[in-house]
Image (tube, rainbow, N blue to C red; front, top):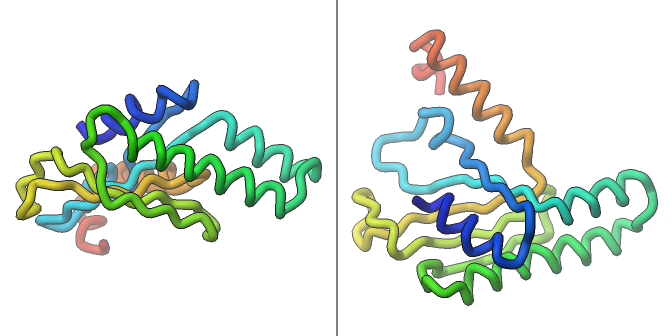
Length: 149
């Protein structure tokens, strides 16, 4: 699956990396035919940098530069991984939540004409995972929640 492929490629360069699917795929509220997967990435190095920034040890400029560097290192991991499965990689680093957009061209996605699967790999976005889990739980408790989405 996509999560395993991404984790395998990235863990070669980043120890302790964890990926979590969130958004409509996790909550079960995806629209019919939807083929975009949101994935949150945990890299210990990033959280250490964020803590140093929050504690006033690193400046905003230094924090942004180091975070951008990590996002592009992850992009390179996917771009040059041995499976050559990832394509259309595009990093958005100047955002509250840095994102690496891409496509798994070997996903066998039945909703895509070419079988590819688009993904957004989001950095430092734990709250989105929690919110998606909460929406999923709400929808399991009461089917009316789906109608509100």
